Length: 193
Image (cartoon, rainbow, N blue to C red; front, side, top):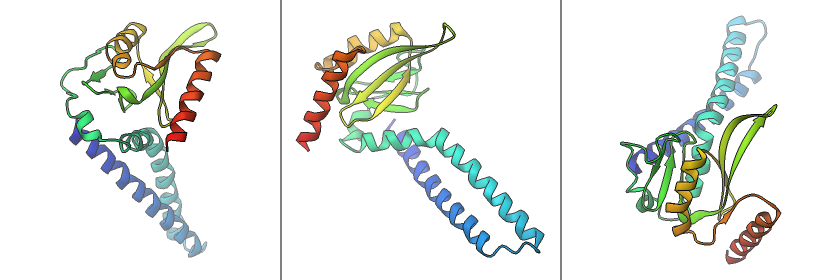
């Protein structure tokens, strides 16, 4: 798992540099753009299209890894993820791989240590009365919010067996009381820094 995360973080950084270079090349071509030269015009148009498509790919594929890598840099993440095996998911329906200290969700592309979770609740989104998606919303000590796709039974198992033992003060459920407790915990975390 450690090598997998390192590859993803490296790929995300390389792709970010590519976006910056493509952005600078596009605006450089605009400044030297000569409308009488149709090949230069077509080239700048194609470069613009590549840049726009690259931004969408970055947002879809790599933006979550940026968020996860920032979350992982707050502690010794290599030791935390060293026991997560990518052979077979612990929770097959949700494609969640669990280790002793953290879990990895293949659908949501996130790695979260259990002790970082502060507030967690289950949410079913409806569209015209029909359930569309089942999500677990996770708030961490650093203030990040992650959305995990999981079934209610798998969420209950994950909560009972892994999250609560590592983070006994975790706020469970959604409501005004839970929001209030989460804000108090966040305020205490900010004051620690």
